[in-house]
Image (cartoon, rainbow, N blue to C red; front, side, top):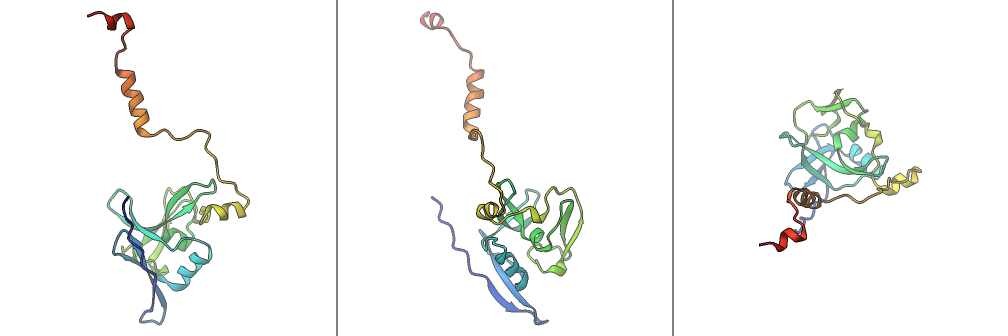
Length: 169
């Protein structure tokens, strides 16, 4: 089993303008996200996890993200920036300075985009879903593992012989 590195506690400091900032460590990297302490506290008060990760989108960009739940109880990664600006469906968050680790509100801008979920659609955990009167969705049948379907496909491709064909030499 792979040993996980313990995530460092957030560091609070003050910037040159006297604003209270927090630097949040991101899992599996030495990077830290920077945001205003009041925004961080708002996320913590809402029940979101303080354990954030630095996750790539598969197209070369990486963003600070955390686990959150949909109204159906499915656990997904959501960008911290979407939660901070409470982005509606159909809106994308852009970073003014191009740095996704800078989560200060003046660095976050919304623009139109084909995004399906609003930031308000995310719940911090399954308990919050239940408190809101939403029961997480139950699956009718278990997921098939990829290896099972691979075996089935291979088995279908192998020609079968009858018992009489096998006995003949």
